[in-house]
Image (cartoon, rainbow over all chains, first blue to last red):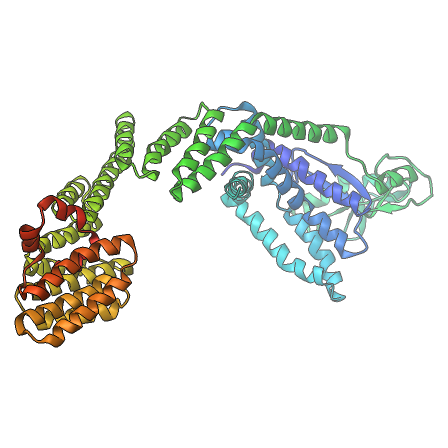
Length: 175
Length: 403
């Protein structure tokens, strides 16, 4: 088992993008932000401290923001590298760099347990008013916990690989 | 700035440096003393006391004025405004720009790989559809785009070897494939592919021979095909030609015995099952004719005609059987019916191939009606036609018309 901090160091671009995604959605939803740490040694390796939004939708978006942004960036960055490296077996240094970058970003797409906890805390209040999104966020939070549990068996890495290498290959085959 | 008094030591401290344990304010040294006294276990963790008059972001002291809060923390007006509109640090923006620029550059730099990949995939699909000309054009182009890919070069050459097959030149394909097999001995399927193409080439030649009624040659060619590439389908085709050959040789009993073993190898192919059933029927009629059992011959011919009412060969065969009956009984109604059926068959034979076959058959049936002699096609050919002309003028349609 590789210690978490080593993985965090090896894949630090993903953590930076993860926190930047939280910040982006805070900005988009006009939620005040007290403090941002993009990367540090420690647990958590990054954070965004923000005001709790008045409605549930911004909370939801801020929580799932990294999943959307990291996944999209993983795809965009890995895409140019996949064919020379994976299919044509070329020694393309830029390709290797982009692959590492893309997979690192994809690995940190899952919202953290703390993200899920914050979302659930707000969802509990919102669900009392029969907010459908809040009700749906319960199973989503379950999935987030499961996904983070799965990181013990490299689920986050496998997700990054599938997204960065698998999906582009699938898309290219359809052309 | 606000101060609080430590519950344990009674001294006064700035609020921001102290902690609160179970509602009691404590200075740090007193909290550590309690920690040791409690065997390093607190029922609930201590909380940092927060001075509502000091900004947590910039540390500015605002005296007695309580500050507005963001995320539960006091912040001054300036920091409050910054919190309302957070910005991305320049290094984050620059990094993202550089990364996207690199990705864009990489995409442009590697564009030929994408083009080659798409062409190779399309080529693969064309090859699967056996459109080898189109597949080769695509794969050759892909290989030119990425000349460093040995795999693409190999795939292009592999498809190039299949191109003549699309034009029906299996022999040429087989030769190219065999040459490729020598060059790439590790690709073991190539040698097998070359043998299969060679077998198909023999099979195609055998079909041509069969069309010319040269079943002996067809069998010989299929023997080569089967020895090159042992395969149940090729073996079945060989046996079908063998049945035809035996019938040519007036050995319909042997032909029938062999024909009856054919369905065991047909499988689920409906068209093939139909073809084999037709061969068995033909052999049965031929065997009945050869042993002089004209009632069975007539019954089988009528059965065949009922299944194929618009085939001139089937109608003419009923005429042939009726002519046999006339030859042995001398009863005029058989002759009249035979002529009627012959006329019907003549009207049905509109295509050139049918017309040619019918002409050959009509000649023999009319001879039978005129002389009341029943002789086989072989004997008729021997007596009245040269050997070469019979092979040339007797098309496949007369398979049922040799009796």
